[in-house]
Image (cartoon, rainbow, N blue to C red):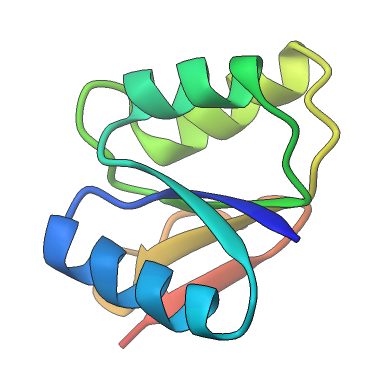
Length: 96
């Protein structure tokens, strides 16, 4: 399974990526929304995990643009509990 991970904190992104890789997943990382959009356009993914508060283009804007561009991969939005934004139709996971 191939995962597109958009997380702006490199340390956290590496921890998540390492954990998923240990379970046999292939993870492609982006640390901002702009890079994430390019990677989404260039590759095929089974799921995308997007932090709601990405730099350059925030995660919810990335989500909306991907859906407008007919990106049909399931998307999970990561949000901090105290800063939670409206959920995407695919799901929201709060980091506490």
